[in-house]
Structures are given as structure tokens and as C-alpha cells.
Image (cartoon, rainbow, N blue to C red):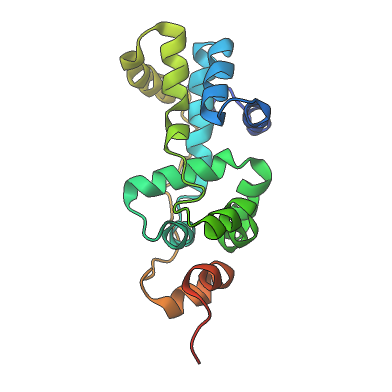
Length: 193
């Protein structure tokens, strides 16, 4: 077995930035870019995206999504994590360090000012690789079996169980203010004294 996927983190983020610079939506631009790179790169991109997704699969990030989305189901959290990746490397890395940093993101402020819910959530981003695969092969259904085979061939040794951190009650306003003070101030208002 190979030690890791073929796509390194820098290459992944370069593709994201190239897609973000396109006039098309990011998911459409990325699907086009990945299709031009071929099947192995599509699979490698998906594996790297999954690794980055896993790194933000945490209760504190989910709590941020819960505030921003006015609630957040399992499926919605997948869309939120895809949206965080779509924001690009700088914002992604800020959120890894501190999900409360999203209180500074312009999309959050725009959504609050315009009454738009679910800023950052980006469902289509989660299907970029399957879309690119269908463009290359003409067969979307073959993507997931190919991905499963690719993952088995490129699994890193020593993969460990994922830890989401400390679970807490997202409906506890006091706890949300304690853990995510800036986002809570935006979405819950100031605490009553």
C-alpha cells in the first residue's frame, strides 16, 4: 500500500484558489479543473478534501454552524464543512484554530444584514469530485466504487480514530456564549445581566 494520497495539501489549495478565481461558481469551476486533470487526480482531490473535512469535524465547529444556520442537522453540517473548505486555505486554517473567527467573515456579515440564513453552507461543493468524474467517464455511478478502491490503495498507515472534542448543548445560550463569544453575540445577541 502507498503511504498517502497523491495530492499534497498545497496542490489541493492551489486548485481551490484557481477555482475561486474563475467567473463560474466554485463547484462548477473546480469540476472543470479536476476533469482536465484526469481520474487519479479527481480521486486524490477527494481523499485530500476528506482529510481536511475530518480535521474540522468537531463539536465546536458544529456549534458555529448551528449558530450561523439557526440549527444544523448532520447533512447540513456536511454542507457547512464543504463551505468552510470553499472559503479557501486562509479561512479554513483560521477556523481550525478558532471557529469563532467566522464572526469576522464578510459572508457572515452580509448574511446577517440581508437576512440570508445558512451563510457558508455549500452543498454542491461536496459533489465536485463526482461531477468531475462524470465529465471524464460519462458515468457518475462508477465514481464511488472507484473512490473506495483508491482509498484502499492509498490508506495511510496509523490512521487513528477521529476525536470531535468535547460535546456540549448547542441550545444552552450560556455555553454557546462561553465557547463562541463573537458568533454568539451576532446570532444570540448580548447576554442579559
